[in-house]
Image (cartoon, rainbow, N blue to C red; front, side, top):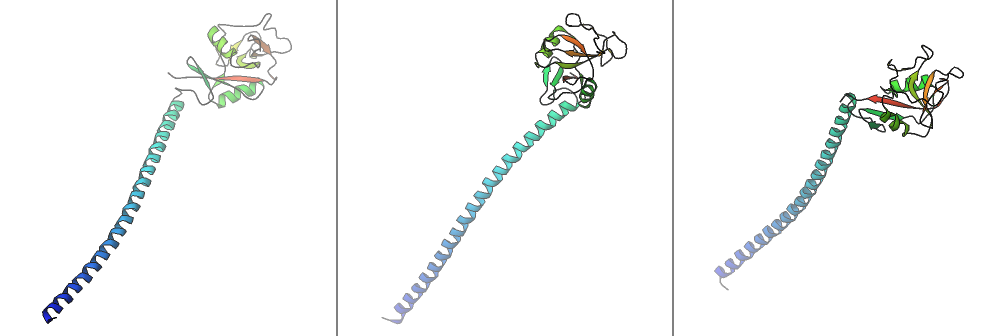
Length: 199
């Protein structure tokens, strides 16, 4: 074999080795790029998940903000209150005296219930089977029944022979028979709060 052929073969062998090394480097680079692509795809999936989670959280916050605005502006009923007409009603889970009941309603930015129509009387009567306090009293002037807001009684649903003031009965209740009765204010019983909405 002459020198030129040997030189040519040596050069080809060298070029082959260089090309094989380049190919190996390219395969390694390709493998690394594939891993990076997978990692980036994983990051993209995570970011999409985070974005969706943030969107949901934003929507929840906007709903809570709208609910809070509605409550602050007194345009909707708080949770667990029941709406009827332009008012919200809450039956107490506990029993208290008439004065304690009035105070608790006021702490909730409400009043003891004020009945202003036969429809409201029917609705309120259907809220519970308990005898409940309402916002009616004649404690200031015996026999002159007034609501907690100072208004005189215009519609009344007294039971037969009531009010009779039998034993210092100065506070109004709705009996289990859905009629009004006067009772001693110190008696502990359930009560209904009313919040009038600003519509």
